[in-house]
Length: 416
Ligand code: SIN
Ligand code: CO
Image (cartoon, rainbow, N blue to C red; front, side, top):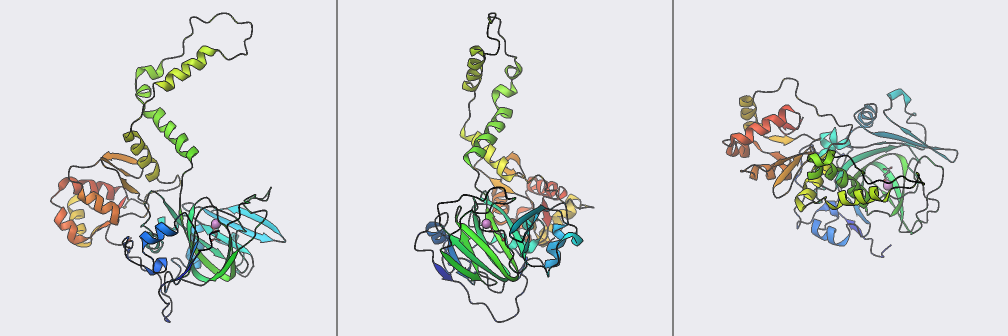
């Protein structure tokens, strides 16, 4: 590990009782504005000095933090089909892993030691969690994955391990001891239901209090153990592997290439010149040559790369179901309401854009002729009422937003 994994102090925690974080989306800090979230660094400095390079401990990153969800609300979310959850426990030296959903009465008692419940994608379901995640939007949305909450009883944790993604570990309740190491040996213990390192040689350790945060780049070994009951938010960033990108792009191309769309794509392999063989198990070289010839005809342009990436990265995860309004407003009423209270993207919506096209929840469209509003909505995830008034003479915008509202992709007002 570089010898500089610095310790930064952010804002000082106020003595008042912690309050739930505001559900009002906070704009991400501007790239060149120092922020307590990053220990007084600007996002630009953080990205240059730490992102994907070295760990950073930030004391008081979010002063006055409180868990976005209470313990009960988290357990309730873990009981629903809509959220991915895992239960990890450690008893008599053995690790156990179970996948949710977990009915309330199937979770261990909170009095029992050494268990932890991990709930992924809490930002999709809770405005406070989404608002917390929004603070990290100085990193492109295409990299942002989700906000996971882990609840643990004393001694609970998932064991020493490493992750393949960047993560901000924000302590939101109680204390957790984190130990980290830059070791090269990332061999895992064989035969376990979860990834636990065979040898863990911690180099640094800290006890994180509510509001403290630890940033870890990929492949830094770490182990977080609860000291008493605690809750931690992990803001995780996905980084697709070359294999994933290649496999998915080829699949995308196969469906959309000129060949696939033309009659030629249905043409069957023909071998009128095939001679009788004495070795029937041998692969015919003409068939190998045919595949080579098909692949040689496949072409792609930068537009295909953008289309694929935008659609793939804005695609909702498979379990995501959008909540459309039961009795949606008609278009005129929708416009009046939006002019008063604004609109915002639903927490489950992903909206990305390129130079010619935009992508909403996996669907690609051409950017409209008047497109400024779309960039504003995508970047801020909301349009204020006043701004909506200025924009609303654009009937193609209001019609599209109304359509998205009816689909549950856009909400009217600041919170659900
Ligand atoms: C946890 O919050 O318990 C685990 C998070 C992690 O180590 O990635
Ligand atoms: Co981890």
